[in-house]
Length: 198
Image (tube, rainbow, N blue to C red):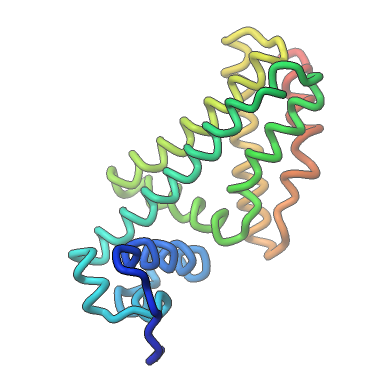
């Protein structure tokens, strides 16, 4: 048991707990952690944890919600990059995938996301959070495909394929215990999906 306690700036205890929760979800799985373990990982007391979160479910939903917020923020930031409008199609795809892979290729974030997807099948509250992530990814990719010249119907079809590819690669990376190679592989795959006739 961790007997040390972190020196936490007043008002940041909740953030420290959410960070620790996401780290533990990535390391051990959504259902394998307790409030006490989160408190220990955060260097806070159990009382601090229960002050911020009534129960384990509330903490998990808040942590996954925060993760979704970070995905949405990253995708929103990528959407307003000025160079997207002037880049060549290949440079555009490379730039988009640098942003897109930020979530997929950080091991704990990737594993937390996979945990979230699985839990979404069982828990409507998690399904809503998961849908926010997918909508953010979808919006980023749709814009990239639109700038690359695809019409809306074809872009929608290809975005679905890219998301399946990315999730499949993340799942395979997790199963193999190997680094996710989305950044190095995805640009060529995305370009092929964007330019190959259906």
